[in-house]
Length: 162
Image 1 (cartoon, rainbow, N blue to C red):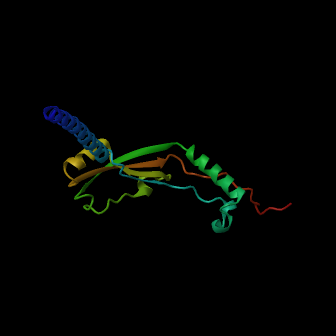
Image 2 (cartoon, one colour; image 1 turned 90 degrees about the horizontal axis):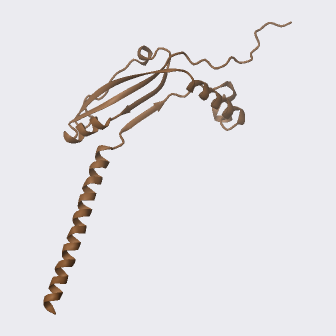
Image 3 (cartoon, rainbow, N blue to C red; image 1 turned 90 degrees about the vertical axis):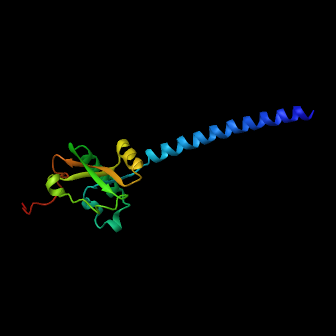
């Protein structure tokens, strides 16, 4: 009887070890995937100017006219064609050096900037992980407007009276 108990105990230990090994492998793979696909990005989307129906904004931000006009202006801004420019930025020591990169947005996007997006590609994320953060490349994507945003003209008096 004791021999059968020993065999059953060993079988249970083997099954338990197999499960632990599978869990360890799964945990390792999950950790690698999380580290590599780490979501490192910053996105700034430039808002259109405030319509006259929303000024002063602190008083009129919730009004139906303001909300409707802001949505109309945002749709008009979204319809403007854009150009995308990408720049690779190389940081060292976990992003501590260099401390900043200077871009002249008036020169890069003379008609206006729609969006600024800094992110790591998969390849850049792998480089960063392999070098333990000593080499940290990033991509900067500027989305420039191809024409200036001019909202529809307001019905303003021209100063002429009849």
